[in-house]
Length: 83
Image 1 (cartoon, rainbow, N blue to C red):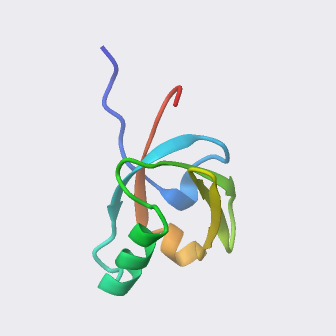
Image 2: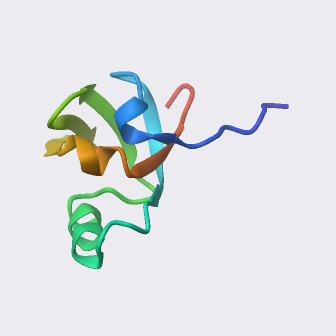
């Protein structure tokens, strides 16, 4: 049986490591959360960091977007194996 995976900040994810969205920090305002969802940052999406830093470049499906380092540090993801 696999051990449970703990959430990590998107900004701490290793480049190329697949993950699934876990939670937006409550400190993000509703408009920011809605924008992230509209960009595809949903629980069903596989997310990969392509470049850490500011901006943090993430890939969701076939789209790459830049997220500020401060926002990436507030997004929690669950690392995935073999996705």
